Length: 89
Image (tube, one colour):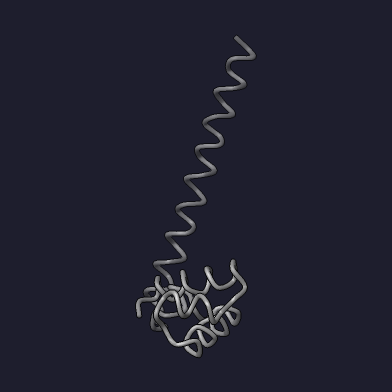
């Protein structure tokens, strides 16, 4: 099963609280769903954790996150300048 399917199945089982029923509805083995829930709880059922440990990829992901934060900060500052410019004028 795809990672997205596993994550959605875990989410659905957590919402409903009944692993057996959700597994039956999805047509999967209850033990598989229980295992996926365990992996999710341990933080091992995520896209980042599934990727092989590659220093270049890790640096790329770090830089991408830093870029997103920098863009957010820039946008906030632009809005602040606009707000303060209206007050002065």
